[in-house]
Image 1 (cartoon, rainbow, N blue to C red):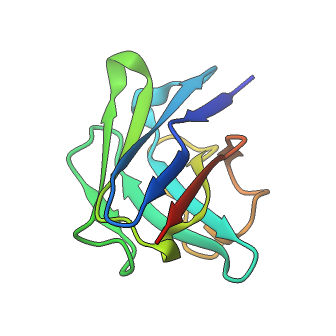
Image 2 (image 1 turned 30 degrees about the vertical axis):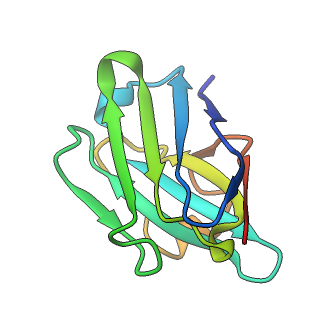
Length: 129
């Protein structure tokens, strides 16, 4: 059984930083892309970042580019999302997502569907101004 467990969320003031972690078990972690997605009641599911299996290729949504950094440690089966210069608009539940198929990433539409891939339980990030 594939299981993803996020941690590191919490409350922070505007301009602050947080680092989220996602530990994966039950899969060949180093063969899978990893994605970060966030959800708010108003905007729904929003893609945040991708990282390829070896960690050398990353991509970010426009709203977080330059402020967030995704990384991974395959030996620890963990992916990280370091978030800096946070604003109230970053308040959301953050999920890590692993595709079901090795070596293939999920598309934008797929990342707006919780039935695509394996999802963690989410971790709440609240940014206060």
